[in-house]
Image 1 (cartoon, rainbow, N blue to C red):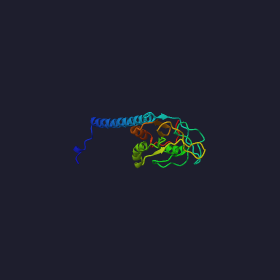
Image 2 (tube, rainbow, N blue to C red):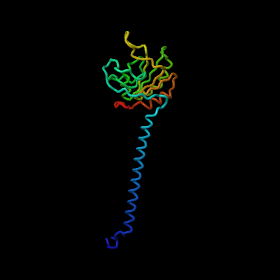
Image 3 (tube, rainbow, N blue to C red):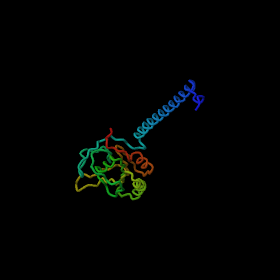
Image 4 (cartoon, rainbow, N blue to C red):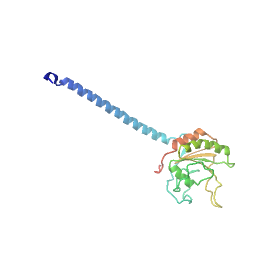
Length: 208
Protein backbone atom coordinates (compact mmCIF):
# COMPACT_ATOMS: atom_id res chain seq x y z
CA UNK A 1 0.00 0.00 0.00
CA UNK A 2 1.48 3.38 -1.02
CA UNK A 3 1.56 6.53 1.01
CA UNK A 4 -0.98 8.09 -1.37
CA UNK A 5 -3.67 5.63 -0.22
CA UNK A 6 -3.15 6.31 3.50
CA UNK A 7 -4.79 9.70 3.59
CA UNK A 8 -5.98 10.84 6.98
CA UNK A 9 -9.55 12.14 7.11
CA UNK A 10 -9.70 15.89 7.10
CA UNK A 11 -11.07 17.77 10.09
CA UNK A 12 -14.22 18.68 8.21
CA UNK A 13 -14.86 15.05 7.33
CA UNK A 14 -14.37 14.03 10.94
CA UNK A 15 -16.79 16.73 12.02
CA UNK A 16 -19.40 15.47 9.52
CA UNK A 17 -18.98 11.89 10.70
CA UNK A 18 -19.34 13.02 14.30
CA UNK A 19 -22.42 15.08 13.43
CA UNK A 20 -24.05 12.11 11.65
CA UNK A 21 -23.42 9.90 14.67
CA UNK A 22 -24.87 12.55 16.96
CA UNK A 23 -27.98 12.87 14.80
CA UNK A 24 -28.41 9.08 14.84
CA UNK A 25 -28.03 8.97 18.60
CA UNK A 26 -30.53 11.81 18.98
CA UNK A 27 -33.07 9.99 16.80
CA UNK A 28 -32.63 6.82 18.86
CA UNK A 29 -33.13 8.78 22.09
CA UNK A 30 -36.22 10.53 20.69
CA UNK A 31 -37.71 7.21 19.50
CA UNK A 32 -37.04 5.62 22.88
CA UNK A 33 -38.62 8.59 24.65
CA UNK A 34 -41.72 8.43 22.44
CA UNK A 35 -42.04 4.68 23.09
CA UNK A 36 -41.77 5.17 26.86
CA UNK A 37 -44.38 7.95 26.82
CA UNK A 38 -46.70 5.78 24.72
CA UNK A 39 -46.35 2.86 27.14
CA UNK A 40 -47.03 5.11 30.15
CA UNK A 41 -50.06 6.60 28.40
CA UNK A 42 -51.38 3.12 27.56
CA UNK A 43 -51.01 1.98 31.17
CA UNK A 44 -52.85 5.08 32.39
CA UNK A 45 -55.66 4.59 29.87
CA UNK A 46 -56.04 0.92 30.79
CA UNK A 47 -56.09 1.73 34.50
CA UNK A 48 -58.74 4.40 34.00
CA UNK A 49 -60.73 2.12 31.70
CA UNK A 50 -60.69 -0.70 34.24
CA UNK A 51 -62.39 1.54 36.81
CA UNK A 52 -65.18 2.66 34.47
CA UNK A 53 -68.41 0.67 34.27
CA UNK A 54 -69.22 -1.14 31.03
CA UNK A 55 -72.94 -0.70 31.63
CA UNK A 56 -75.19 -0.19 34.62
CA UNK A 57 -73.14 -2.18 37.10
CA UNK A 58 -72.31 -0.85 40.54
CA UNK A 59 -68.95 -0.77 42.28
CA UNK A 60 -69.16 -1.75 45.95
CA UNK A 61 -66.71 -1.26 48.84
CA UNK A 62 -64.63 -4.32 49.59
CA UNK A 63 -65.52 -6.44 52.60
CA UNK A 64 -62.14 -8.10 52.59
CA UNK A 65 -61.08 -11.56 51.53
CA UNK A 66 -60.67 -13.51 54.77
CA UNK A 67 -61.08 -17.27 54.69
CA UNK A 68 -63.61 -19.00 56.93
CA UNK A 69 -64.18 -22.68 57.66
CA UNK A 70 -65.85 -24.68 54.89
CA UNK A 71 -69.59 -24.93 55.57
CA UNK A 72 -69.70 -22.07 58.06
CA UNK A 73 -71.75 -18.89 57.73
CA UNK A 74 -70.14 -15.55 56.95
CA UNK A 75 -69.55 -13.63 60.20
CA UNK A 76 -70.54 -10.37 58.46
CA UNK A 77 -73.62 -9.42 56.49
CA UNK A 78 -72.70 -8.97 52.86
CA UNK A 79 -73.26 -5.51 51.41
CA UNK A 80 -75.03 -6.77 48.29
CA UNK A 81 -77.16 -9.70 47.14
CA UNK A 82 -75.51 -11.64 45.66
CA UNK A 83 -72.26 -10.59 47.38
CA UNK A 84 -69.16 -9.38 45.57
CA UNK A 85 -66.49 -9.68 48.29
CA UNK A 86 -66.06 -10.66 51.92
CA UNK A 87 -65.37 -13.76 54.03
CA UNK A 88 -65.38 -16.96 52.00
CA UNK A 89 -64.40 -20.62 51.90
CA UNK A 90 -60.88 -21.64 50.88
CA UNK A 91 -62.09 -23.87 48.02
CA UNK A 92 -63.44 -23.01 44.57
CA UNK A 93 -66.68 -24.02 42.91
CA UNK A 94 -66.03 -25.66 39.53
CA UNK A 95 -66.07 -23.29 36.56
CA UNK A 96 -69.26 -24.64 35.02
CA UNK A 97 -73.00 -24.26 34.48
CA UNK A 98 -74.58 -25.55 37.71
CA UNK A 99 -78.24 -26.66 37.86
CA UNK A 100 -78.38 -26.33 41.66
CA UNK A 101 -77.46 -23.41 43.95
CA UNK A 102 -74.03 -22.93 45.56
CA UNK A 103 -73.25 -21.10 48.79
CA UNK A 104 -72.28 -17.44 48.40
CA UNK A 105 -69.30 -18.12 50.66
CA UNK A 106 -67.96 -20.52 48.01
CA UNK A 107 -68.58 -18.33 44.99
CA UNK A 108 -66.86 -15.32 46.51
CA UNK A 109 -63.58 -17.22 46.28
CA UNK A 110 -64.24 -17.76 42.58
CA UNK A 111 -64.56 -14.00 42.15
CA UNK A 112 -61.38 -13.43 44.14
CA UNK A 113 -59.63 -15.68 41.60
CA UNK A 114 -60.86 -13.57 38.70
CA UNK A 115 -64.20 -15.24 38.12
CA UNK A 116 -67.54 -13.85 37.00
CA UNK A 117 -70.72 -15.37 38.41
CA UNK A 118 -73.92 -15.39 36.33
CA UNK A 119 -76.92 -15.83 38.64
CA UNK A 120 -80.53 -16.32 37.64
CA UNK A 121 -83.61 -16.39 39.86
CA UNK A 122 -87.14 -17.38 38.92
CA UNK A 123 -89.79 -19.39 40.72
CA UNK A 124 -90.79 -21.45 37.66
CA UNK A 125 -87.23 -22.53 36.83
CA UNK A 126 -87.36 -20.37 33.64
CA UNK A 127 -85.99 -23.01 31.22
CA UNK A 128 -85.97 -20.55 28.32
CA UNK A 129 -83.85 -18.04 30.26
CA UNK A 130 -81.54 -20.83 31.44
CA UNK A 131 -80.94 -21.89 27.84
CA UNK A 132 -80.31 -18.30 26.75
CA UNK A 133 -77.81 -17.73 29.56
CA UNK A 134 -76.16 -21.08 28.90
CA UNK A 135 -75.66 -20.19 25.24
CA UNK A 136 -73.71 -17.09 26.32
CA UNK A 137 -71.71 -18.76 29.09
CA UNK A 138 -70.82 -22.05 27.38
CA UNK A 139 -68.30 -20.62 24.86
CA UNK A 140 -66.38 -18.98 27.71
CA UNK A 141 -66.22 -22.26 29.60
CA UNK A 142 -65.11 -24.09 26.45
CA UNK A 143 -62.30 -21.55 26.16
CA UNK A 144 -61.20 -22.18 29.74
CA UNK A 145 -62.46 -18.83 31.02
CA UNK A 146 -63.39 -18.31 34.68
CA UNK A 147 -67.18 -18.17 34.65
CA UNK A 148 -69.82 -19.83 36.82
CA UNK A 149 -73.55 -19.93 36.04
CA UNK A 150 -75.80 -20.85 38.94
CA UNK A 151 -79.36 -20.36 40.21
CA UNK A 152 -80.06 -18.02 43.13
CA UNK A 153 -82.69 -19.58 45.40
CA UNK A 154 -83.90 -17.53 48.40
CA UNK A 155 -85.77 -20.59 49.74
CA UNK A 156 -82.70 -22.83 49.82
CA UNK A 157 -81.55 -23.87 53.28
CA UNK A 158 -81.36 -26.72 55.73
CA UNK A 159 -84.35 -27.37 58.01
CA UNK A 160 -85.42 -24.23 59.85
CA UNK A 161 -82.07 -22.52 59.36
CA UNK A 162 -81.73 -19.13 57.73
CA UNK A 163 -81.71 -19.64 53.93
CA UNK A 164 -78.27 -19.73 52.33
CA UNK A 165 -79.41 -17.31 49.60
CA UNK A 166 -81.41 -14.08 49.67
CA UNK A 167 -83.85 -12.63 47.16
CA UNK A 168 -81.67 -10.72 44.71
CA UNK A 169 -84.58 -8.62 43.42
CA UNK A 170 -84.00 -9.42 39.75
CA UNK A 171 -84.08 -12.38 37.37
CA UNK A 172 -80.42 -11.99 36.38
CA UNK A 173 -77.39 -10.84 38.35
CA UNK A 174 -73.77 -10.63 37.22
CA UNK A 175 -71.10 -10.42 39.88
CA UNK A 176 -67.34 -9.94 39.89
CA UNK A 177 -65.08 -8.73 42.69
CA UNK A 178 -66.75 -5.52 44.00
CA UNK A 179 -68.98 -5.33 40.91
CA UNK A 180 -72.65 -6.22 40.43
CA UNK A 181 -75.18 -5.74 37.66
CA UNK A 182 -78.81 -6.81 38.03
CA UNK A 183 -81.59 -6.77 35.44
CA UNK A 184 -84.72 -8.67 34.41
CA UNK A 185 -84.63 -8.94 30.62
CA UNK A 186 -82.07 -11.17 28.94
CA UNK A 187 -79.33 -9.14 27.23
CA UNK A 188 -76.52 -11.20 25.70
CA UNK A 189 -74.36 -8.17 24.85
CA UNK A 190 -74.63 -6.83 28.39
CA UNK A 191 -73.54 -10.16 29.83
CA UNK A 192 -70.62 -10.56 27.42
CA UNK A 193 -69.42 -7.01 28.08
CA UNK A 194 -69.40 -7.66 31.83
CA UNK A 195 -67.51 -10.93 31.44
CA UNK A 196 -64.97 -9.44 29.04
CA UNK A 197 -64.26 -6.56 31.42
CA UNK A 198 -63.94 -8.39 34.74
CA UNK A 199 -63.09 -12.05 34.07
CA UNK A 200 -59.47 -12.97 34.68
CA UNK A 201 -58.57 -10.13 37.07
CA UNK A 202 -56.78 -11.46 40.15
CA UNK A 203 -58.23 -9.94 43.34
CA UNK A 204 -56.12 -11.45 46.10
CA UNK A 205 -55.00 -7.97 47.16
CA UNK A 206 -58.13 -6.20 48.47
CA UNK A 207 -58.87 -2.81 46.93
CA UNK A 208 -60.74 0.10 48.44
